Image: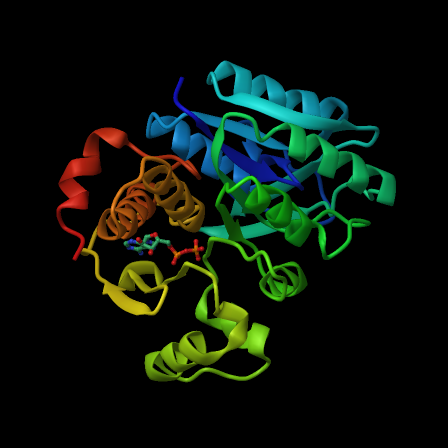
Amino acid sequence: MAKSILAVTMNPSVDISYPLERLQLNSVNRVTEVTKTAGGKGLNVARVLHQLNSPVVASGVLGGTIGQFIQKKLDETNIKHNFMPIDQESRNCIAILHDDMQQTELLETGPLLTDKDEANYLKHFKNSLDGISVVTISGSLPKGLSMELYAKMIEIASIKEIPVLLDSSGEPLKVSLSRKHKPFLIKPNQEEIAQLIAKPINDFVELQEVLATNPLFEGVEWVVISLGADGALVKHNTEFFRLTIPKIDVVNPVGSGDSTVAGLASAIATGADNVEVMKTGMTTGMLNTMEKKTGFINNDLFNEYYKKVT
Ligand code: ADP
């Protein structure tokens, strides 16, 4: 049987969208068109992998009725999952779309986890790796977990020779880049690189210099700096690539980075060559921007747009 990609989200959510003509503060607002989806960056990755027909298992931690709702949504779309149950409620994230394209968000921080939860998750993660070809880890850590958790997961997977694609920022990313076992691929943006090295980066020349010389990036096979409509700057071992994409009609760019991660993971899992890996990531990113739904692509358009990436 083909191996699967394990798509990890440690702080998943139910994403609730409330469209309102006008948001009235200090008053009652009645919402008629509510949409609720399984959210969190790794769940976007899992959904896009499923749409690419790449075998995927969604993982992380889930709890309470919100956790059950997320599992139900995954079941409805036939996405396999293997979350560790926790004794707290997963979170809701609310986006109110109002007053001519304004967006007001109310984001719960989510559960407060313990050292015991962390130790249990590491065991759960280790036991989830049978039949897995690639791991993706996306997003922030819930409160209470150590900044080392992703680094520890990368070590466990690397010992089993499973590459890890890490799409996170701040301290968890920095710690993961400071260890012996490094992520196989990272996808920071230019600001996140500047934050990592605690210095501003003014242009691509400086960015390339940092990626080529800073020991944090040594041993990371792929560094993909996605640049929205401008495509991406990619470092593969010691080589640099500049990817450009065609101009397209953007409907909703939210989740494009997650979609890019899904494309990269899917190509890496099938042993695609380096150019194919990069072009696949760009194509899935673009396809996501063309859809209303977040973390969603129309795979029928894949070949048409893949050809347009240079
Ligand atoms: P993130 O969501 O992590 O900020 P980006 O905005 O860089 O990531 O988007 C990831 C990829 O999605 C880009 O490299 C590109 O392929 C595609 N993409 C994003 N925004 C656009 C856009 N406005 N037009 C065309 N493609 C886009």
